[in-house]
Length: 455
Image (cartoon, rainbow, N blue to C red; front, side, top):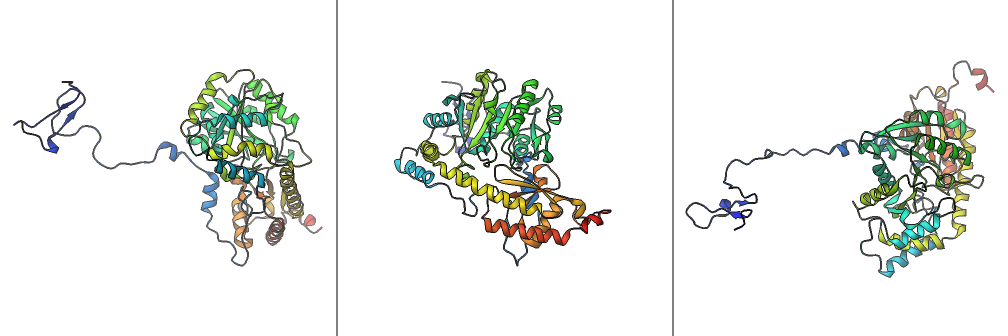
């Protein structure tokens, strides 16, 4: 009899009761007695990862106890979701592509963890160019751009290493990194230079533990778009320091007519780049949760290890929605150029309207945006002495005017606030009017500047 499976019986040879049966999987005898192992008491604690997960936007917004003015309809300029007000629907071709994929019945099962081959081929073809060639093997499909960023951080960095992220910048970078035990270092963006990177400051932060440099272009929250020459300078730093780049390009191609978007990978053949994108913003369907990672590695610096690592990490879940994957070919091929043009025309018009209106308000210093869906507005706090900082300023704006903007503290920056420009034009006009009224009521001349205030 295999000694690994012994059923002990009670001493008199009778069939045992249930409580007298002891199955021994080790070959050693087992008798009832004091149980070994953990103490039999409840002790359930959250994991280190959950304790280390912190979203500064949620922490700040959720802590706001102020209630909006009941006499004024709430205008939210805080949510980066272009679908909220219904004025920016996706194109009918995009919707039809989803209907066709659903009706086909072909996409109800599991897909490969990194996405259907045909869908990855479509992405590779769509973004391929001679300067930055792509094949299906260079594409990983993900559940939104957020998961793409998470996978890139997870494959590039270990606990104890650090990554460099922009300030002001998208809060998710810190949230994801610190939950994985990765240190975050903040490099400065310069508002006086349309939010270009302070390259000397960025390079000074790099050390032997730096795993990657995160570059967000076009920018959330700034609405800035880097020039070709500035991107080349960023690449020069990365090449000099031998640091790979995680390029968050979810707003790629969402730039206004007076500006040009340059994908970072198109400008370099010696810096390995993981570029993250998705359907959410350009196609106005953030809830469909389809993103991607484009692997640019023409010098074979990543090698097979990073590719294999991304595949393994993708296998923790089974990828993005299969129906959206099934619709992808039609979405990329059939969405008319007019749709993109109309979306950008609306965003530029709203951006110009908002920038012009807020520029005329004493105490505010908006920075003109050139793409994405946002602009940042500086607050000359010396003219608003009753408020300690941008958080108090925006709280009181809600309380008095029912206009909700995110304080820049959410983005690791001080004394600015972010405006989302996707709201209907009439709502944008009303919001700017209320912000003006608020500032006029609270504005004070700084000490020694009364003469200027009298002008």
